[in-house]
Length: 98
Image: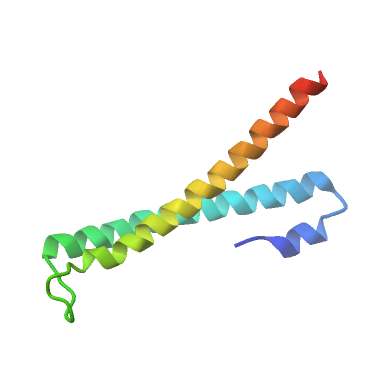
């Protein structure tokens, strides 16, 4: 989900390069949050209907969707966490220089 082609095209201008990467991260995080919510809705629908796996009747089917919810939410959280860490490091660096 990277925008490598665009960022390589603008590598000579660091501001555009960073803006493209930031836009890619925003889109990826928003997509992850959106998909996590949609999968959660499906998971809740399956749970309320009481569906079970046909091969394992003792296992509810909603468990199968839980990985999608956690995976997409985790991807978004990790992108936000990485960006926040970069911003915090840049702020510390600016304070040390001053």
